[in-house]
Image (cartoon, rainbow, N blue to C red; front, side, top):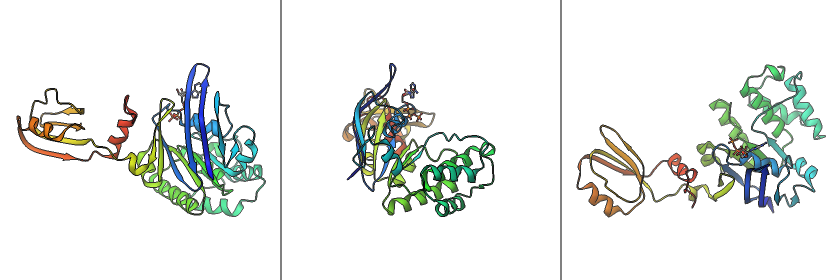
Length: 292
Ligand SMILES: Nc1ncnc2c1ncn2[C@@H]1O[C@H](COP(=O)(O)OP(=O)(O)OP(=O)(O)O)[C@@H](O)[C@H]1O
């Protein structure tokens, strides 16, 4: 069974396009990444999926249930972490966590206590007195304490320190191993690479790639580093050229023999031709014309 199935979902905010014809399938039990630059449409996709906003056109289902007609049934199976954690003021953290569990008509005391301990959250504090990171932890506990079948996490780690990020991902991996499906929206590539098996890249409201993280990370471009001088002329396949007093470096995706014969005309003291790092590969998807 698919955990998430999105069919040609489009959302316009008046004249502004949020997402355009998004189609995506996430299988039950997957740890799926959703990557894209600011304003790409990640939150719009998630909010539409959860029935928080209505699509302009298209349809989607969660565990084979329609996002509009079966909204309540879907929400009972989902844990949602919004990108910004906002709470009613005046509550203490423990009251907020209990309030969130009561909404689900579930006793989550034991699970909540374990999560608070692992994430080191002081439940006696008032929510309005919490730091940004601690507010995030409270939101994480509200999203996870009822042990949902599907976790939808929108930029979950912003505000968490590195130790807490590690603990948080340990918890997610444990949940995933126990069968939960995880949909992780992020623009932190290392998070996606270390945790997800598949990912989709969204840009300007459209899915531009969807594949295994391994396949997405592959490219035929090389990073060329030169110490010395050479005239590249009109060499085809050069991108991201950076020059310094010492030499130059660029991404190259053209013919290797042509590159080598061009380089042989220069005065070169040192040369390296290496795989680009992951950030560079993903920038290629983000840039105009980067779609496969
Ligand atoms: N309530 C709204 N009213 C008008 N336009 C909106 C609204 N919400 C989002 N948009 C627009 O829809 C597009 C997609 O925004 P969205 O928030 O979904 O992107 P995102 O990928 O989640 O971005 P970020 O990583 O910055 O959170 C953007 O152009 C944004 O300006």
